[in-house]
Length: 395
Ligand code: PLP
Image (cartoon, rainbow, N blue to C red; front, side, top):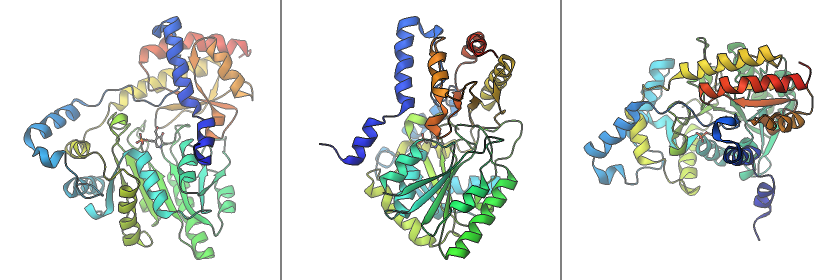
């Protein structure tokens, strides 16, 4: 028989995945062009051409024993140095290779840092709505996820409740900016206040509270909005980054953790995270991809393609009468459902072959997440059906 932990996970197998399969079944039954699947956060923009060129160049130019070999658990030193210098250029920081650990995507990085930090029973705070997997990642290390309730006015974090929920057992806080599922970018003011509260609570309790900033969507921001760089707001910040979305490489599993020197117990945390990478079975981030992202460090995905989708879907849904705040980043819209029972709405949407994810999957019922990392054409074809759906609710 399987473990109790995995039994629970197997029972609650991700709603998002189940919906993906439902989409595939619908496509078979009704034809792919008649199904409007907005359920998955899989990039719709191909990786920049430079990525393929870089991979080909690496395979032809670099020593194959090196390219396919093991290296230090934290990743290649030259790659880490390239990542650090890129951050320094963009954010005026002073990081070096010794602050970076290459990871198996953001998910790998989050697991490595949680394994590094958590003792059983330690609390990890996060803000609803949040990426569902955080609960599972924290559970992996027998931590307790403490959820701050959503602020549905503008989806900036609810900082008053946050301050109240910090206890002597709080070991870490996970924030995700730009945010999945709301598309909101936490503002400069929010980050200032977040840093202030954390400093105050560390002093009050005499503890170290690490802020883990999960940033796979950092590069996806619109209208020139600035995504605050959290190490500038709070010394005990660890950044988890991934190229899954910024270079459209989610299946390749490549990202990094940034652990600044200013973090409490820096040397211990960095060394332990390196060991956590090894003993979790990752051993190291994929070698070829490490070398590829270093060569493509200044490349970017076509953000304008997502922006076009954002504009079309946001304006189209508003025209139908739906309520939604305009996202400033990532590739999701978080729409208020015309009924408080959003699961009923999700079921009704299926009648029109529209697939969206219920907000309760992100600890925020009464909303649905619509992922607009899809073809522009699909958005245009889906809008009349959203209108029919809206009409059912008298919008
Ligand atoms: N964090 C958030 C908020 C995400 O939305 C995702 C993926 O969708 C991840 C982490 C995992 O990213 P990766 O594919 O880099 O592991």
